[in-house]
Image (cartoon, rainbow, N blue to C red; front, side, top):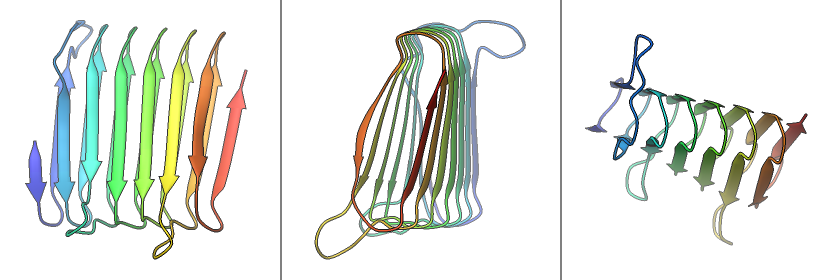
Length: 166
């Protein structure tokens, strides 16, 4: 699903109502604009979801992105470029899942990841160069299970990163 403009909504569901849906190629939502909503729900194994909001020529602010995956070996990614005041939530329940999110030139965004299971990996990037900063972002990563992994880096001012692993 690709949307340009404001106030749009995009929903993708794979394997709903108790049915598993395995090996989906990729659920992809790309939105440019303000006050958009992106939701992906996947149930099953080896699924992939990607949400991208904003680009170098079209800032995106006030958006909501929500990715929920239940199963094993799933991949979830979120990318934000040139936006502020966005709210992102990634939830994964299962083993050997991977989540990745990046913010490039974005400020005052809230990103939270909740992962339950074993052998799950999360990578985060908040990036900027010398002419622009990514500042005031709040990132929360909660993991429960064994052999989980978190890596990444943050550039900019007044960013808050909270990681809890149990």
